[in-house]
Each structure stands twice: as C-alpha cells, then as structure tokens.
Image (tube, rainbow over all chains, first blue to last red; front, side, top):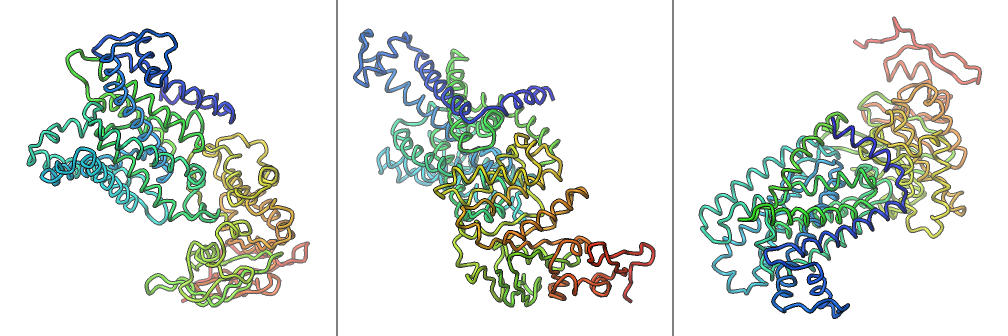
Length: 366
Length: 271
C-alpha cells in the first residue's frame, strides 16, 4: 500500500514526460551506466586511484591527457580482470531487463519475469547437461568452442522452456496468468531436480557449485566465454530492440494486432527465440540472477510508459546499472568472500514481486 | 463489396456456420442478429481473417481474403472486438495512435496520422481524455477509445484513397455503453455508411436494428435464416419464429417499425 501511494504521484508527475523528456531520461541512464561502470572499475582488492583507472582506460585507447603513467601490471588488473567482469555485469543486466520487458509484452502481463516463468532455469539445465554429457569430449574442442557449446545448449534450454510456458499458458487466444505462474513453478521445480541430479552424479568441479546456478555470479565466467558471448548478445539485443513498434501493437491483443496488419505468428516465434537465446547466454555465463527482468521493466514503465521504443532502451540501461551496482556490493560487503549476486537481486525482487501481485490482484489481472 | 460465397466453418464434426451466402456493400449498415451461439461472432471472425472457412470463400473487392496483403487490407477493413485484452498503461492518445499501424510506411503519415487521430477522438467526444491512462477508464469509455482506434484505422486515409470502399465490423459494440452513447455510436455508424463504408454490427436489440440498419442478417444455429432490407425482413413474425419472442410492431415517427414486447406473456414456449 505504501509503495502504491508513493508510486501514484510519481506516475502522475511522469505522465507528463513528453517525448523529449523521455529521451533526456535515456541520456541520463546512459550517463549513469558509464558512471557506475567507472566507479566499479575503481573498486577491488588492489588499491588504485580514479586517475590511475582513467589513465589505464584512456591509455588503451591511445589517449594520455597528461595523466600519470601506470605500471603495466596495474593496467592489467583494470583491463584484463575488472573490465571484462563489468562488461559482463552490464550486458547481463541489459539482457535480462530487455528480455523481461519483451516477455511481458509477449505474455501481455507485467508478471512475466524470465526467472519466475522458468526461462532461466531452462537455460541452466541446458548448460549443465552440456557440461556433464559433453565432459568427456568437450575438452578436446578447445576453450572457445567449449564455451560456445555450453552457451548454445543453454540457449536451447531457455528457448524450450519459453515455448512450453507460452503454449501452456495460452487459452483460446488469451494468456491465462495463473497458469503461466503455476507452470513457471513446475518448470523451475523440475529444472531444480535435474540440476541437482546432474550435480550429484557428475562430481565435476565446474558443476559442483550449486549456488552458481541458483544464485548467480560474475566471477566464474571464463574470459574466453565472455568474448564469445558479447558479440552474440549485442547482435541478438539489437534484433530484439527492432521489434519495439510491433510489441506496442501486440499489447492490444493477438487478434487486434492481426487486424492492424501484423503477421503475429512469426512475430511471436521471433520474440520467443530471441528472448530465450539471450537469457540462455546470460545463464551460461553468470547463472541465475532473478528478478532483474521484473523490477526494472516495471520501474521504467512507470517512468516512460509502455511504449517499447523508449521502454526497451530505458530498461536495458537501468538493468545494466542495477547489476553493476549490485556487483560492487557483492564484491565489497564481506571482506572475506563474495556474496552471490542473485542473493542481492532476490532481496530486492521478492518483496517487489509480492507488491506487484497485490496491485495486480486489485486490478483483477490475476 | 464483401462476397461471402457458400462459406461453412466447422470444428471437428460441429458445424458452426453452414453454407452462408451473403454480399455486403459499402454504404449500408448490416445488423447481424441471432441468439447466443448462432454463429455471429464466427462470421465476424471469418470476415476479419482470424479464421479461415472450412468450405467456400470470402472475397473483398473481388480479391480473395487470403490473397490480400496484410497492410493493404488493414487500411480498408477494421474490427472492433467484443472484449479488449489491453491492460498496459497506455494513454488514450497512444491507443488511438496504434490504429495508424497499417500506414507506418506511408510517405505522408506524419501529417495525415495526427489528423486522423484527432478526428477520431473528436468523433467519440474523447478530446478531454486524451492524456488519461486507458486502464483507469470505465468499461464504456474504454469501448469508445477502442472504437476511436478503429476509426483512425480506416478513416483519414490519403485523399486518393478516400473514395475506396471500406469495411467496419463491430462485434456487439453497444454492450456496456450507456443509452446515449449506444445511440451516438449507431448514429456514427450511419455517418460512416454515408462515407462509402459497409458497417456490419452484431447486436441483440431488434429496435436498434429497426432504427439504424439498412439490412438485417439473421443467423440461427449456424444457418442463415433471413436476410434482406430491414423494412421487409425484420417483422414481429420473424422475432416470434427465430427468437421465440412475441411482440407488436408499431410505426415510429420516422415511419420505421419498432417492437413492443409484452413482459408477462411475451416468452413463447415451444413444446
């Protein structure tokens, strides 16, 4: 109730956000992304000053600006250790938030979070299956092909569970929301059981850590995997962003979108393939990071409205900022060890989900 | 002209529509009458291209529905559905603007689009609600917004296309509207028919048909049981035969025939 009271005036104030103001908000989010990434670059076990960090980043680009020269090993810490991890956090945050937004458009319901409806756990099963079943042959392939195989398998897992949930939740042209959420529970439970079995029987180092799959981490992805995944993710995200206008029409309903000249069948198939593939890649790299795809789209929808031309980029940037900041917390909260990042997002997301459920019930959506 | 040629639609062994033969011309209002489950919505969905006939064919302006390019047909045929699934916080303006989707690639859409949207909003007296959140409107207001969206879709097309025939399908549009908006909507349908549009309205109230429709189409159990001008077809005898309702026909001040139902004795039990 309290959050609702807070949200209402906020919503009214931003209802007046004109198109130009929405663009300004997106510019602001761009700034926040760069800013948070820079802050994150400064934080780590080796103490480096902001000017040293800047010098390392600019030095790589061939600009000096008269900043102090940096010892090569310090530059190495920043560029080879911290930067890939931050890029990973940024891209995974972007991907999860954009996929959440797109799935909510596809399901026409703001509760369709990739984690809740089982898209992420499908990806986790896919990745784990490949690691276990391929353990005897994969190491012959070399690290980048190995990463590629794991990522592809995770993509297939996520696409499969998205397809399944969509089929099951759709009744006579409409999405039945309780069915969607209940199917999500079932898929998640089944995926948990399969993962548990795989981990129990496999006893592989790569799999032994169950917390990676259930709570996520940016510390484990091998750098080769990150460099395989980044271009692929960017390509798929661009493709998904190009569906913004069609997603806007799809919110009216499948039949209505058809009446307006959209060929909805290939559109839906494309959305399922793209969101599944993107989420699968994220899971293969960083495990399950829940609720990003729920919180961020909802907050951004309050700010810029449901128009996906603004909503998708805004959600992407905000998701990136959220995970960069959460990653800073995960690395620094405890001096002895890292906290799995999914714990932090779940602390934020689970109460948020309850709040959304209650307000949806008031709107009679569930 | 919409040419419905010997169209049947069945699911499994169950025939929802059986050999329907109809021609619908621009410039006329067609009242689609029939008891619940008689196939009205199925016929609408067939004309809307959502379903495909099991037998027979439907063509619009001499081109089979399956051969029409999606965008082109969306520029001349619009459908107001009975229920809307929209539950995202679009403003009224944004919902109506979605009606312009079929024109997204037209060269002059930047000027024509906003005009068409404003005209549609004015037509349905929604000017004051333009910035309101669609989901917070009453059911009747939402219905009017959807109708404005549909109007923006087929009206205000480039001047060259203004003379092309257009087709508007309204699936029980008066349900949920208050009395004055029911009549405003039907009067609007009248105006649209005057502008080279065929308007097909499924409805339950024979007096609405009597007051506004040029023709009536009566379906019962998937069969076309009556079809013709309102004046000759819509009679007390027809209501008795196909709806089991006894009524007296009286002449209105506009020389049309209206029906008065006797509450106590009107229900006619067949046994």
